[in-house]
Length: 186
Image 1 (cartoon, rainbow, N blue to C red):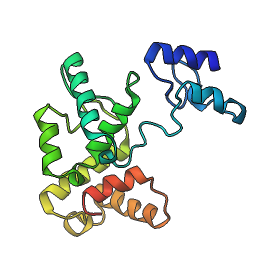
Image 2 (cartoon, one colour):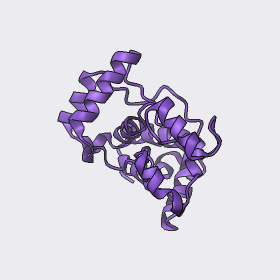
Image 3 (cartoon, rainbow, N blue to C red):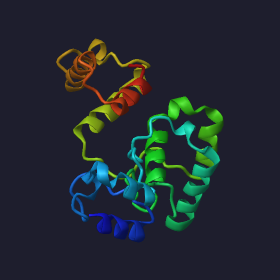
Image 4 (cartoon, rainbow, N blue to C red):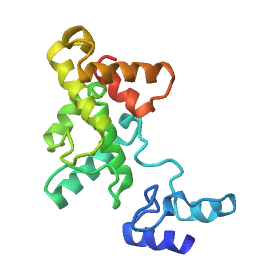
């Protein structure tokens, strides 16, 4: 497995194989205490690059430069979350999209100036994200996220919102999903 991870690093320039089954099998899940030193030698990331909670903690200028280099190579700033050539950039872009309201006008302007894509063109395929986007649109129109008060408790989005409130009460929502919901005044 170490040899496979070394080949992955050689192919992609990093040792951040995605979790779960992929073209490399389950490299991202492979880990044992005896292998820690070997993984450290490969500069293995112990925190998933896509788990960025606060993009402002990263080297902002450095990440902007990496994003601009991506744009120059690919013609856009639509970096996918699990971008294999630079997983840290993919995670940072996803976090920036989630935390737009917390970035401040100056940083938003910097991103807009280089052509940042605020909503990925990739369909995440997630029913959760689809409902969240609907909630975000509702919030943009109404200035709040009390869907039931406007559309009625029987509306599909109102039912989803109540289910999210119940999940929040049970502390069953991930930090990422809570960050999304805070965007809309949750």
